[in-house]
Length: 116
Length: 113
Image 1 (spheres, rainbow over the protein chains, first blue to last red):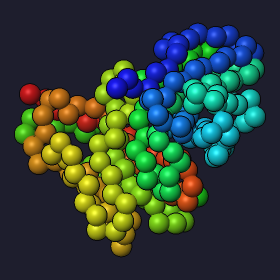
Image 2 (image 1 turned 180 degrees about the vertical axis):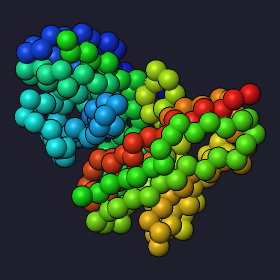
Image 3 (image 1 turned 120 degrees about the vertical axis):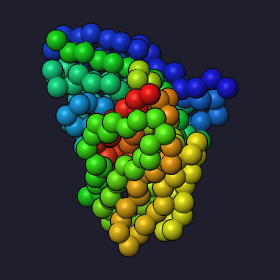
């Protein structure tokens, strides 16, 4: 069974630009979560989507947004990029948004975003 | 808010040594606890989990016991291998509805042959 796929794997952007990252969950998984990983802040939750609806959101500015499509694929968008947005963005999929992490989450390899 | 504190690394061990990575947590509810591992250039993999007090999670020789009285979930392995070299993250999930994970800072483990 194919794992979580994230595209692109690497991306270089300039300050002020916007970027869209894509995540394809494991077949049959309907919940997708996004995390930002940086050396300074570690792993931080961005948002979670289920059935095309945002179910939970982390403490990030409005420049960070996302969406989920009917086939459960998800995209996240960062507008007006800042140097501090340079990070590894990880996507995780699970069957559903269970209580207290009931359903195992499977992580993709991430998209490495560099903002110059 | 919820938080997870892990011992700082890197932790450097010789092959076959005993491993302990400390993890303590603060949570408003009754969380589930997890250990994830990240190998170089890869995403995170779930290593083990525990969902209630005194539960012991185990996988690939790694173990961790959910200690509610000390709010801890320390990771242990009796004999580490070079292939265990990776970054280990302790995490909790506290939402009644959702998969949000709160992670510790991560501990780098280096095992020398």
